[in-house]
Image 1 (cartoon, rainbow, N blue to C red):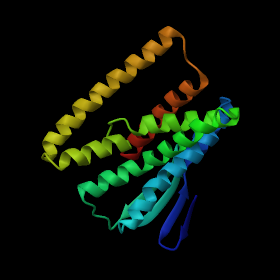
Image 2 (tube, rainbow, N blue to C red):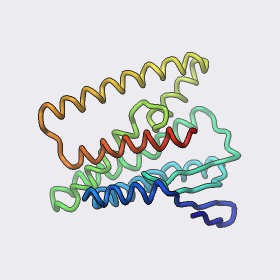
Image 3 (cartoon, rainbow, N blue to C red):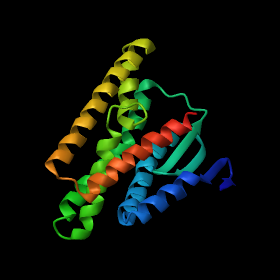
Length: 200
């Protein structure tokens, strides 16, 4: 479903409905709704600085894991790209601090606290399809040529993949899996799959 408002195209794709149906059927609807809300606020955290920096926003789509922003007529310096990459996680960091102090007063704040912690950790992983990886990529490009940066990024992503596998195995062996952990494992897998399909 696509709607054009001025120069911006708003769209809601099949991945959104598919992911929503999956998480609702799995009984994780509260996690999913909360995650979508804070994922969207995360993306708005990217949107505002991009607009301030003079980028034209031509596409806003609601996908499997939140809002995606398409920009055009946008040539940013490596420094500004780093700033834009960090602004999304910064929004989650602010909510982490807020809900950290509120969660002791009421259990209703525990879920948004956990969701924002999960979103912050996932997005700050040094993987190029995530904010942490984009930040690292543009930071390295400030000092090295593209071939060397690609080599470094590939090596870092391999280390991150190994560490994630180790964390998952340790969690399974120690039997400390909870609903939030399962949700974010599935969430991360969905992010990877969606990004792979988007590149085809």
